[in-house]
Image 1: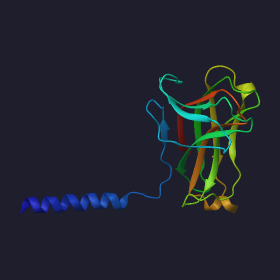
Image 2: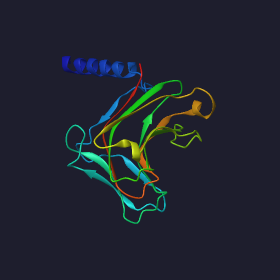
Image 3: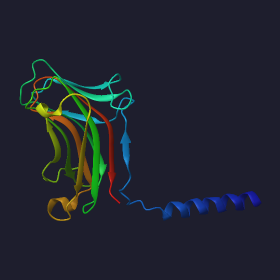
Image 4: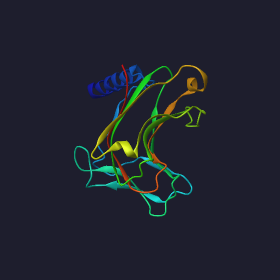
Length: 189
């Protein structure tokens, strides 16, 4: 009998704990050092020629990075990006940080960290792209830290935000490689 009473008491305590948790909290942090094959999705424009890779030998602070390798016959207007969704709420401020390195890219290419608004069903809201971009002519050698801080507006289409689509990409690129590493996403307190 005491075992039944103990089991019921434990079940009630666990249930009360779960009910007390705030399931609408969207300030969970995300970090990935890309030391293992990542689970980011990817997208490229229709005419693009290139590959999305996991490079186990590159890395900003340790081995492992996501890589976009532009193909030989890639047109100058090509675009490539890794994509991942993060829960978001209008009126809140979010930060994304990533380390970027480029090799052999065209000077006019644009390497970016960007957000787009999506609703709770991950449907585009028609919001503008918010980005931190660096030109191929400016990136230089070695790893560069890119930061994007953005407050989701509480009005207009942004007011329906349920997710931010985060993209790490390169556009206007016809050659070279770009690497992404040590990514983090978090909400300001």
